[in-house]
Every structure is written in C-alpha cells, then in structure tokens.
Amino acid sequence: MKAIGLIEYGGPEVLHVIDAEEPHPGPGDVRIHVRAAGVNPADAMLRDGSLAEWYKDLEPPFVPGMDVAGIIDELGPDVQATHQLTVGDEVIGLVDNHGRRGGYSEYIVVPAASVTAKPAGATYAQAASFLMNALTARSALDALALPSGATLLVTGAAGAVGGYAVQLAAAEGLHVIALASGEDEDMVRSFGARDFVPRGEEIVRRVLDLAPAGVDGVVDGAVLDGEVTPAVRDGGRIATLRFWNGTPGRGITVHPVNVRERATDHEAIVRLRERAEAGELAMRVAETFPAHHAAKAHQLLDQGGLRGRLILEFSPAG
Image (cartoon, rainbow, N blue to C red; front, side, top):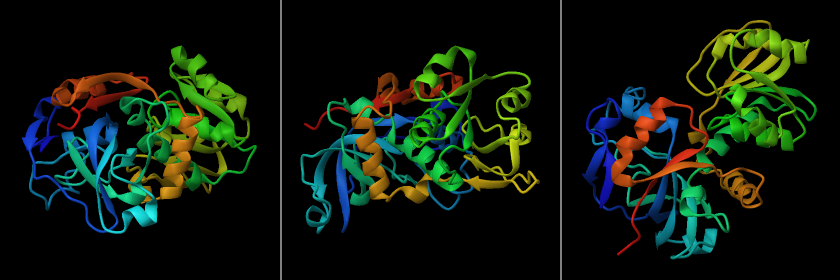
C-alpha cells in the first residue's frame, strides 16, 4: 500500500510517498480504508524531529497522522459483536501513531474503541478535521475540572484546539475569555466566548480587567506558558499542551495534556462525534490536497494562521 512518510527529520520537503506493508486487524481491531487524513501540529512535530527521543529506537520510515475518516474494510475477531461495526461502515478514527503506523496511509488498523461513525452528512474531509483536536480540548477541560460558572481563559482560541475548548467550555456553563487575533473576534464569540482579548501587548492586564481576581483556569492552546501565569488566580489551574514543566507558584497547578491517553476512550469519541453531527462542534476544513502533495500541506501548516484543518485525500478503493 501507499503511505506518506519520512526517512529523515526536516522541513515539509522530507515527506514523500513510500511503499508500506498492508496491515490486517487483530483481535479488537478494525482496518479502515482511509479516504481523508487530517494534518495537525502533532504531525509537524514528528516531521521536524521534536519527537525524536520518542522515536529513537525505531527504524524509519515514520508515518504521521492521527485523524482519519474512511470505510471499514476488515474486522478483527469479535469486533462486530462488541462494537456493532461492520465492513462498509463509514467511520472516523483516532490513530495513536508511532513508527510506520500512521494516518497518512491508504489503510490503517486501529482499535475498534478508537472508531465511531462518520458524522451524518459530513464529507470525508470534514469528518477528518476535528476528532483529535476536539478530544485534546476535552482532555484539557477534564484535567482542569472547573465547576460551571468558573472563569476560563483560552489562548489560541481560534486555533486547532482552542476553538474546540471554547465551544465545549461555553456549552458547560464556563465563563470563557478568548485570546486570539483581533480579526477572529466574531468567530470565537460565535463559539460561545463571553469576553475577548486581542493578541498583542498587555495580555495579562486586559485579562485582569475582565477577571480582577484572576481566571480560575487556562487552556493554553497558543502555548504561551509562563506569559499568562500572572492572569491566573492563586490556586488556579493551567492545562498545557506542549512539554511545559513550569513552576508557577501561588498554588497554581499545571496539567500536561496528552491526547494519546484518550485514544481508546470510546465514550468520549462517540460523544464528540454526536456533538459534531448536531452542529455543536465545528468541522472546519481550510484546504484539501491529494495525499501525495503532503509536503505542500505542511508548508501551509508551518506558515500558521490557519482557521480550519488541512486535509490529505486518498483515492477510493479499486
């Protein structure tokens, strides 16, 4: 089968088509014929070597990709009885990618628990655009465990994870202060943000003008780390997405978030699909590319400023 992978770390140009062994499902697994794969910041971290320590004992090629949408074409033993999945089902799945196993592949085997139905009415591209980031946001909010009515600051509120954090938090009764580019104010308010702070100078002062005692928690989608700590109240909480081991003091706790820990949380995955299907979570596609143009997609990803996911599309079977 064909996949998109890399032999050495570097810029987008290291991504190329590779021949890979076709996988088959074992007990509890399904195989998906991939029709669309989301391009996420985690994929760029694999590509540029940020995850090299995790991959040090593996031989390349390495295949990125954690978000897929496609059609089940093989079932492992007992899957149909335990998960009510059948060959031919249109599904989305979260891929805990590692080594040569990744979503940028014509076929991918994943645990049935990592799979749910494709949102009704969604294209494959739309269906591949949200699950990983929405589950990351869900994990961040669960780690913070803020009560309804608490004040939450979401940085990068128009971005991949931040937008879903705003939507989920607002629906749960949190008072969301969204931090994003000024041009994105209308969008993040449409997600449910009550207050807005434009990205730029004096972020902390602007946040404290809205929450004088400090916010109760932060979902740090923009990876600002200690820059936003002064805006958090004593005893507050910060959910961080990228390896920050800061010691903020004042009783503030830092909660690292790793979506891979939720890769087989079937209940959470199903619930997020239901909310996307109901229009409660946006499925935002910025642009689509044939899979063999993955390098072009990563060039755009590296430039930043996207408002939606880039998607790689694979050909139908046959």
